[in-house]
Length: 266
Image 1 (cartoon, one colour):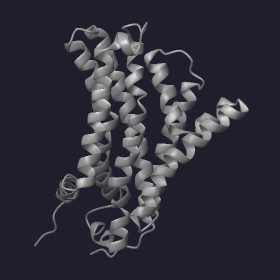
Image 2 (tube, rainbow, N blue to C red):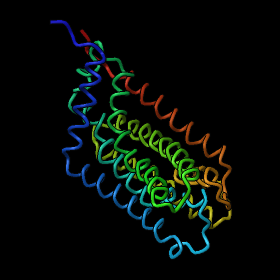
Image 3 (cartoon, helix red, strand yellow):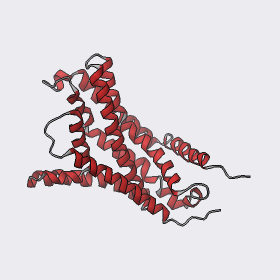
Image 4 (cartoon, rainbow, N blue to C red):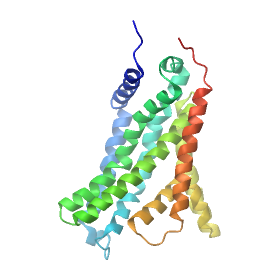
């Protein structure tokens, strides 16, 4: 029988992976709690804007509040560690990788399929609540549709960038070990091992430049600039360059790591 083509194999990897993840209690809980908490808290702030944020203008700058919700950082990290840490590590541990990378699947195909499993799940937390919040605010006539549509577009771009960063970094960490627990710990280390020390050191020595090493602070710098919020300690072009460079470097490093794996083809 002829081998199935690349499209069929890619589709099989993606569909099987997503079905498996949506059957796992950990993924279901992380998705439901993460999306629910971020979305509900954002909409509650919209509904009771006068009580929570007295004096806050009903303009584009308001939507920095839901975009800067710390719950996004925690649940994106949790989702990346729960789902992404095992995507490549388990295949390396079970030697299933040699089967995946047999013809006609290439290393790039394999990584695209794995990213297509992880990215939609991360985006459900990093993108979906931020896009729905201005939409609901406009439906309730609390903000004009002009402001809401602009906020939706900016939130979509910010969320996709954050999703791409965590997808590439998580896949890199997963490709470096055969134990998903190590990769999961690495995801938390990248998040909180950089963010917390950067905040403490920058405050103690008065040097905000240290905040550039924190992906979350880079994201916040972009969000402040996008929504027109003052008080930005970081230059958003540098923050954008750092996040994009980290995403590209992590993706390239993962690809090179996969190329180094010996595969039996035929």
